Image (cartoon, rainbow, N blue to C red; front, side):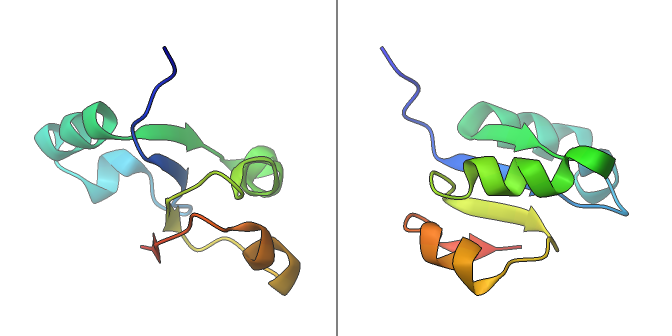
Length: 78
């Protein structure tokens, strides 16, 4: 059975999820959502490879018009 939880791309640089969320909130986030994290050199490829399935993005990645057109499931960017 596939994981049906909403998909989140996490690219919060220069922060990290540990700096944004309390340990309890981060645990709850990871329990309720599938999260893929991109940092440093993997940031752009993480967004590009997963934007089509993402429901949410945490961070401030460079989102071109082309990427946003692929983001059919995107509900919010935090």
